[in-house]
Image 1 (cartoon, helix red, strand yellow):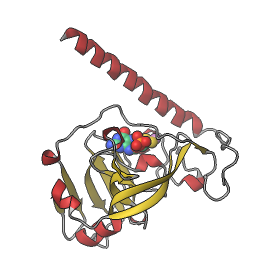
Image 2 (cartoon, rainbow, N blue to C red):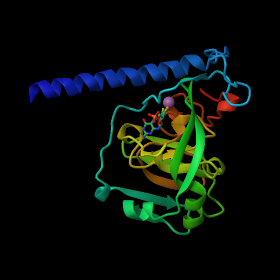
Image 3 (cartoon, rainbow, N blue to C red):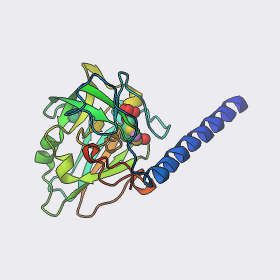
Image 4 (cartoon, protein in one colour):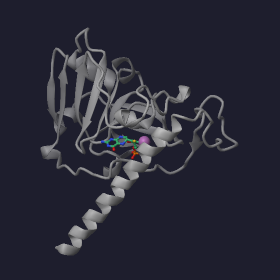
Length: 229
Ligand SMILES: Nc1nc2c(c(=O)[nH]1)N[C@H]1C(S)=C(S)[C@@H](COP(=O)(O)O)O[C@H]1N2
Ligand SMILES: [Mo]
């Protein structure tokens, strides 16, 4: 249908514009040292809200504009690279892994923070115990069903509160937020938390991901304001 095609192309162009705008922000912001928006007053900003963040109540959707929709039957999670026991788990196999609940806050580089998500899923600690990374493994590369990639040190991925989440606050994570399974690494800006995760690779060398090669900081610690490189 011609009308449908026109619409798809238009949406594609709008998305390209959004990505270009984020890249431009990354380029400009790394030249500035000024703080970002002032935090919302009345909250305990000292210990909980990282510098330059403001609190939001609703959970924004941020991605490349492609929402991969997979049947559970076609879905796989591959864990590979420098591990003793690589895996290619089906949905049922993942759901049979040990399940945990983790309460955590979200901090996005675009300056919004959202408190108190109760995530449910598989802690990365438990995944690591199953696949057993080799001593040379120092980085984790995440790949998603929309083509997105991101990278982080194994030490961060392995933190106590990091998990592969399928539910939040008692409900399945909505598709646009990464269903059926997304990574959640609360100690880093949220772009490190890959939605629709497809593959987890343990590596000796770092491999900067989608935003990391487009001006975002490689390390992404919100308490150090590691926003743009
Ligand atoms: N697969 C995938 N994961 C992704 C992204 C993406 O585009 N694709 N965007 C990242 C960015 S930049 C952010 S801020 C968060 C947003 O997650 P949310 O849409 O659930 O708020 O997802 C991260 N994970
Ligand atoms: Mo983001």
